[in-house]
Amino acid sequence: MAGQTRRRSKREELIKAGIEEINKNGIAGFSMRRVADACGVSCGAPYKHFENRNEFIAAVIEYVNGQWREQQVGTMARYEGDARRQIVEISVEYVKFLMDHPHFRSILTLKDDDFDNVYHRLRGELSSMTQRLVKGYCDSVDMPMEVRYRKIYAVRSFIYGAVIMFDNGELEYNDMALEALRFNIDREFDLP
Image (cartoon, rainbow, N blue to C red; front, side, top):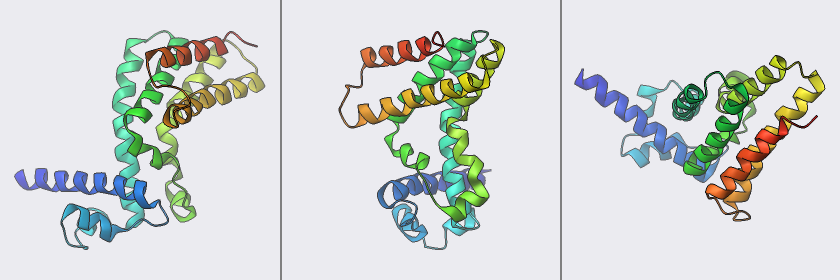
């Protein structure tokens, strides 16, 4: 049992070092050797936990997805039965998640054709909740397909636009800005 716990904690340590490696060097410059060095283990040690580079990167993405999934569950439960409010609150929570964990943002922008051909669904999981909620809400109120598309586009633009503006200092990241985000996403569903 203690051996399994150590193995899991070393795996998580490698994953966290992998996140930092992706942040510093991107996917093209990603090095398992540097990850191992950062953890103080041999260059072969990561391969005791991961079959290859792609499996390691998939584990990094799954780790980030898991962190976000934990937050989503609580938010969804708090607003159960109110699909529109779930959209708004999940969107605001996603912005907060990305601002509170800037080192996870690089995972969203990963681009590697070899990796994406095998693991393309993993990256999409991080942001798929808002898409599913918007689609579900639009279906429940019989919005036409082209309107639903615009709503998904608008909500996702609000999310990523807010993160970029907060990150570059164009807007101050505070409660007032988050309330404006909340208001605008909610208002989007009153527009045709």
